[in-house]
Length: 202
Ligand code: MN3
Image (cartoon, rainbow, N blue to C red; front, side, top):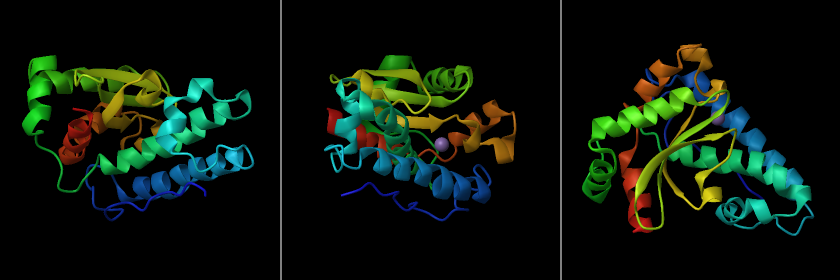
């Protein structure tokens, strides 16, 4: 049983003009597939192959040394990108609804205050990594950022929304203009996915 890169749930050019076709092709077909195949290669014969990826990432710190780094980097890469494609939608944008917007309002003050906090975390991540909206086990929200391919699951938190701020995610279209990429991300955010995950936490 090996891990596979899921197909995109929309066409490569479906997120234009905010995220361009070539970025999506390279990002999904080359970068994500690279993480998936390196994860498979690292776990082969380890006894851990075929475990749920969430389970591996949640417990990454207690994995055998031989596979720990590969799971953190390539398992994280595979899992983060699998989520990321779902966090985007050509019919996305707008604001979340239901219990998620209530929680955002109570944790951050308002939706706009949340966007400011998330955007600041995404802009301030030095080098490569991710910005996240996360929930703890009680449903309390916060914004964090992680380095490289680390995932909030390893900190006991559930990711509700994540933005890839590696240069490979935006450089072809935005070059050094990461803040513009962050701003446009909110025009294609799939809040339905975030709300669905949040409901599963509550
Ligand atoms: Mn990426």
